[in-house]
Length: 178
Image 1 (tube, rainbow, N blue to C red):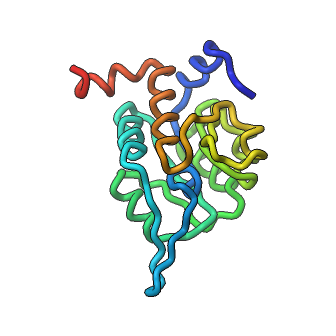
Image 2 (image 1 turned 120 degrees about the vertical axis):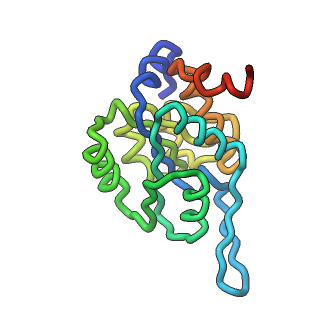
């Protein structure tokens, strides 16, 4: 389902909202449980910075995940992501709510997921990505397969691509690059 560069540019220019799964996308998919009942997840700092740059460019971020974890709320708060939906088993319901809330259409949505439960959103969003280590079934539906694995820079790879292909890279990178 790979896109040619011209298609990629056209789709990227219309993106107003990026929706992310968590486990296997923002994290490496590991779930660490300690003896006190705490759940730990590892997030990649550069993924977070990529999300902040998207926000600076005016693109909204939402998280939709099937699991419930306090650490996801904490990471989202650190990144200024207010649209956080956890323990969602039918992600398309929240997807529809977000489209209505922000007056968007499928053409305005980018999505990154990693498993078969994400296929429904892969089929609807205009521009989709899966990490290199995503489930094979999910990869069949993604427009882009990142070179990096989930939780290891895959989100940053996708956010950089969105910014560059939409023409927004210069706007958000100039303060860093001069």
